[in-house]
Figure (cartoon, rainbow, N blue to C red):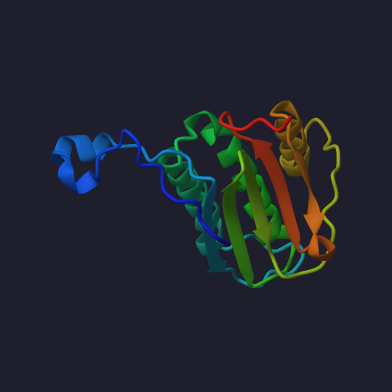
Length: 174
């Protein structure tokens, strides 16, 4: 993937700015921006609790997503995207049986794509949870947040990758 040249018009080099200014600098959104994180998870059998170490990976993914969005100047998306990330990563850990999960954020041509790949080919199912159920609403939330933001979601790689694409404020698709 070829990166677009950085936007430099009207922006001083960070090295030239005083220390206080450097901390306040926000990088303009690039045409192409990618972050990908791969982490190991413990193999799980149906009915087993999620290992504490694996549960911490969900928090790690949310924190990384929020930091990356802020770095890219996409603060208005942070709350919704961190919830989407949380649900997709949790689904990969809980339901796939995989030992490795890869979480990716990409901004290309004004569209943010969040994807989670778990190496196991099984299509996730959108279900309606009972009113008293403590789980089972993850993909329902992903679908509604994505639709409310004018995006789409789905699966690929025979279900091994679940993704959603959201327009950024800088680039609503026509």
